[in-house]
Length: 187
Image 1 (tube, rainbow, N blue to C red):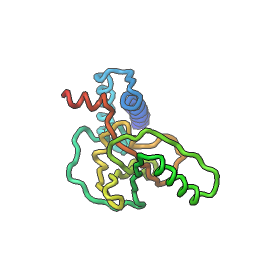
Image 2 (cartoon, rainbow, N blue to C red; image 1 turned 60 degrees about the vertical axis):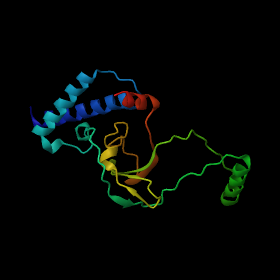
Image 3 (spheres, helix red, strand yellow; image 1 turned 180 degrees about the vertical axis):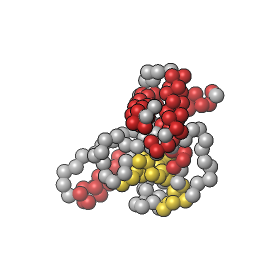
Image 4 (cartoon, rainbow, N blue to C red; image 1 turned 135 degrees about the vertical axis):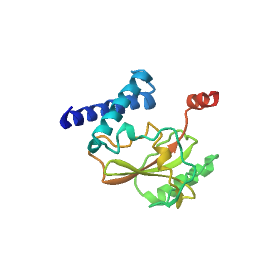
């Protein structure tokens, strides 16, 4: 196999495996068996070993497998990572709306969504690659859990496309679905 053929095959395998990861872990609609997936991954790993110059940090082969780190370095957040407050009364909600009206001074809308109970996380991307993942911690600093987050196959190691800032952070909640939680408890 020539270098050009190897590069082409590595790129094709990477894209195919990333698509299968998305279908399996995000959509919960796998289209190939675990055995077939593993065969594709083994081929990719073998080619990357033979042609290391084509190994990308976003390759599915670079996703960290189930080993998670328990010793986390503490990292300061670039911007404070605050928590949302709870309210259980109409009066508190009305007070909140009054404060928003005073601050914004123009027409606005609210977006409401379900609250998921999990781990608050800030995931930084640099040049389209996952660079760091930090828990909320105390809001000013948190644990660097990057190796652990790389085990979550629904979180991309590399972004698709090119229309994104050079460096940015996505904040959200990492959680287990009830189905996954029940499966883990059954094991």
